[in-house]
Image (cartoon, rainbow over all chains, first blue to last red; front, side, top):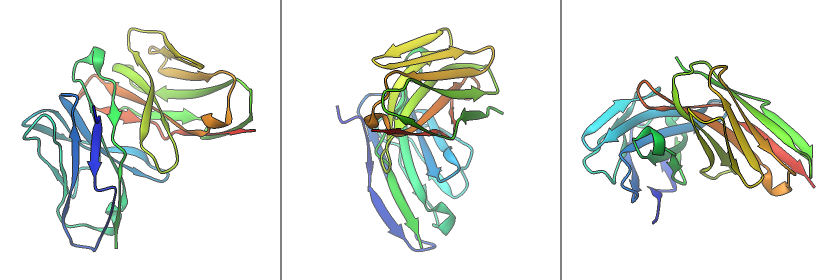
Length: 114
Length: 112
């Protein structure tokens, strides 16, 4: 199993550009989520999904869109990039069932917005 | 609102010492608590998962305890090694909304 994969590893954008961060998992997990990690702020939840076709907002959703058309994929879209979105982005997945919901993380995408 | 704190923010110890990292959370309505390790510039690696009905979990030199009623968890590392140097994060999974809330982490340095 590849686990949770993220692409790209690094990305530089100009203000106003849009892009999609890809996340995929091959563990058949229902639950997937996106976090951003900033110095001094810890990990903050952007959006999450409890299954295909179901998404919900986390703590810091503004400026980001998600969709979940399949169990495996959970892309994160930046609509119009801003310097405040410079961060490291992590995708994670787990089983939805409470007894089996250990989270597994991808390696991260380091995004710089100029 | 669930808030998670970790004390201390940073810790430096000589090799071989036993040490304890602390995690506190404000809302006891949790499914579980998970401890992670993060090396600089890397992703998060899961260390231990404790379900809300459990009191502790062990893996090798690591032992994590959970006292849900008091909103506390500790991660005990025995016989620390320089390779244990990393940032350690705890996260709780909320019952309401099912999302995870992370603490800010403890940065550990184990000196040879």
